[in-house]
Length: 355
Ligand code: KG4
Ligand code: ZN
Image 1 (cartoon, helix red, strand yellow):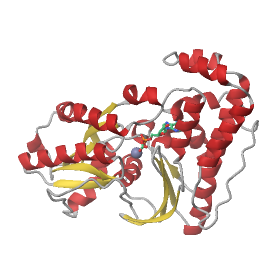
Image 2 (spheres, protein in one colour):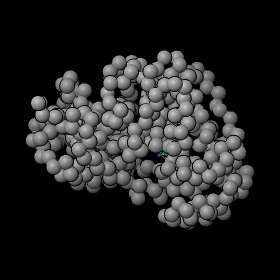
Image 3 (tube, rainbow, N blue to C red):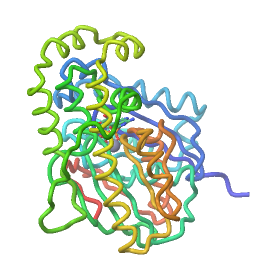
Image 4 (tube, rainbow, N blue to C red):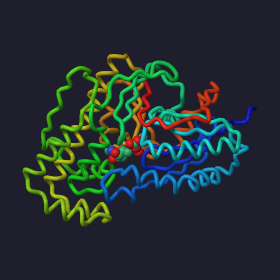
């Protein structure tokens, strides 16, 4: 039997420093994610300069930890894969520079991976690579809200994307304006399940041109107007002062009207996402739907997507939905087989597109 190929993946495109070893394209041998939540939490969003500095601090121990948990030395690897973009320029550069240095010392080939393709592979890691095609892929995170048609293996066609904020960004901004902790997605997701999603009616933005594009900045502004019209300053200040408290305490101190607002906001985001998914799946006659990225761990979205008409909808487990390096290593396997290697001149591509 051929020995399984093993790839070390490195991810540093935003605010997670991550490294993982994946064997045979599917088996996660180790996966380490160092989050920068403590650094960015007090600002309510990612501060790029601080992110690069934290990556610099974390990259060496994180990679070491991934290899030591796997029990492998560099000789046991077939390649090193790294995220080349899209993402924050300074953050990407830390991962790329370190990966290049490791490759030059170990003489392992370097593989450049698109972060969005990584998110799609997070689903394939668990579901297997033999999907019925064409597939529809929604990548929905703090930085992206993109719909792709997956036409064949490794060929993508962009069907629609956000024209302003990404869906996760809308969660983070709404959380910030309501005095909730960062990142906003997980906490709003939990609080929303205690509110009435029909309580506040938000209108869908009218999209001129491509009807499969998204827009979330109007929704964020509508939430802001709602908050301003109700004079919630004291409630918000008290909530901010309580950061770090447990969820039960936060829930008990949140008025019903605010829970209803959050449930209605979440319902609107889910409706916006799934209306495009349903429509585009019909247009391309999709056989499978893949939903990945940080927002894919949203419980409301998972429940609602389970009821989409007759097409299997696949999600990664929540730990693989948010940024990680196992998805980067997994996406590198087909490139290893095609011997698609990057040179020592590999640069960061902050605005890299997938299609
Ligand atoms: O994929 P990810 O880790 O990083 C990016 O590539 O952006 O996604 C992080 C984003 C954040 O905006 C966070 O608020 C959102 O995913 N998120 C969620 C949930 N968990 C994380 N949004 C909604 N519901 C969740 N349960
Ligand atoms: Zn991501």
